[in-house]
Image 1 (tube, rainbow, N blue to C red):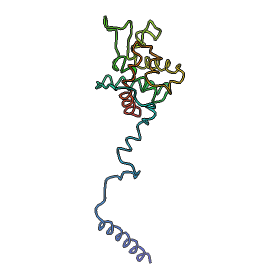
Image 2 (cartoon, rainbow, N blue to C red; image 1 turned 60 degrees about the vertical axis):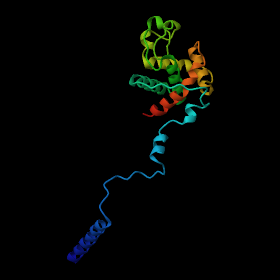
Image 3 (tube, rainbow, N blue to C red; image 1 turned 45 degrees about the horizontal axis):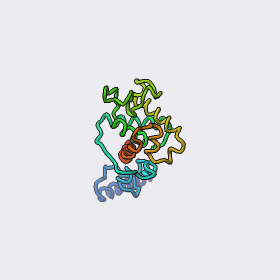
Image 4 (spheres, one colour; image 1 turned 90 degrees about the vertical axis):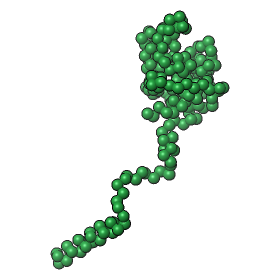
Length: 195
């Protein structure tokens, strides 16, 4: 009986192997999970919702510049500081658009005769206006957190057009200039918020 049972088990195992071989070679590639979404849609799902980034749509003609690695690094530092402050993606869009207008996302030191008073850093903040020491406001994290602190003090900033929120914090001589950077700022946040 043992011999007969053994032959039966071996026979069944042999049929299983033969059946598998007859079905074709094994696929050694791991199958992608079936989600019903294209690869582009899956990648898009990782990005923040455009309605959160630009809730009012862009205002006016938009400007765009090509970013160097340094400028991209500064944008990522602004995003990291925004997250550290516990603020949403919209705050990062406002911050990056502000920095694009003020410094083109360059952490500027004193520019000599070309300097606007004592303005420094990504946001062109002034030590004489109480933003911090020159060392502090040329630190991307510090300067972003200082900007965001000012933004949080603006009643209803989340519902304001970008240029109005930025101007309320910055008090610029060119209050409408921030609007032109909203699309690029939103694109940068969409690309780097979850990276």
